[in-house]
Image 1 (cartoon, rainbow, N blue to C red):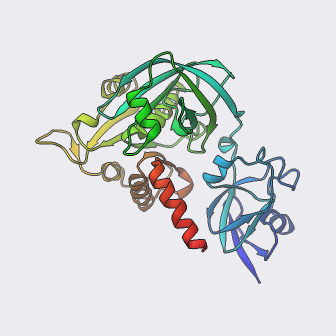
Image 2 (cartoon, helix red, strand yellow):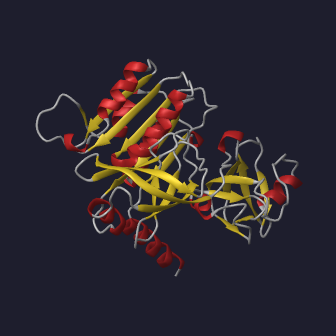
Image 3 (cartoon, rainbow, N blue to C red):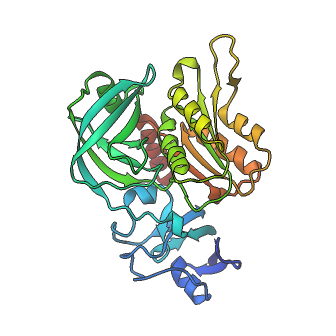
Length: 347
């Protein structure tokens, strides 16, 4: 008895016996699977689990970080399937090679982007240099608060770090930022994390969809793509409830005027009164404009319900699942609910 594991880069699935690792079965079947130590210490066989269930036997966190594991990455040499599964080893542009840094930063600017989103810029004072890929995030610790994850909104080549922090109901850290954080305060930053980052080798169209403060990583991705000279069509759909939730509109309008391949499309889901703007769900606007998305890539960031709906809609228009790079913004309450549900399932 065994399980069938499909490998994206290999035409023929392999059978993995109970208790066997994916790497062992793949190598035995003649699959040229990237690997090194075979003991969970080097990370050379780092892969994406596309579907199915696996257990990971003990490994070094230097080879696979906790954030990478949460993002769906595994080590093939440690992965023992418990169902049929699909995996893909990381392509060159998927490899996360930035060193983990522990930074001490200082708040240099702080302003209100909207009624519930604050934009802050941090100067690195110790622990650098800090390198990351556009679309990644970091764990920020404010005085007396637990660490919270926020995406970098700035480009990786900009020295200061920009973050957009939306105040959430019951959110201690976001309330602290809204009420007590001041210019000159110290902020601890750990990172970078995340695999939903810009793939600069991709040559096809880019569909970027942001909801609310999900604009932060999408801003970094779009600006980085344009600055790198990526010439394919790049469309940014920004979904918010009402007019008062829009921000950085002038900034993106200027980018659209400067770069002929870039479009900025704000979408209101609950407009307050008559409007000439596009209305409805942001993912519906995106797929309405792009009936065939084969060969395109999507970058999604925002509330989980938006990310899930957008992913389903994009796949229905011909986009490949591996071309959907998503970052769902869970609140701490939502994370706690997910953990509770998982514990009940196990019990």
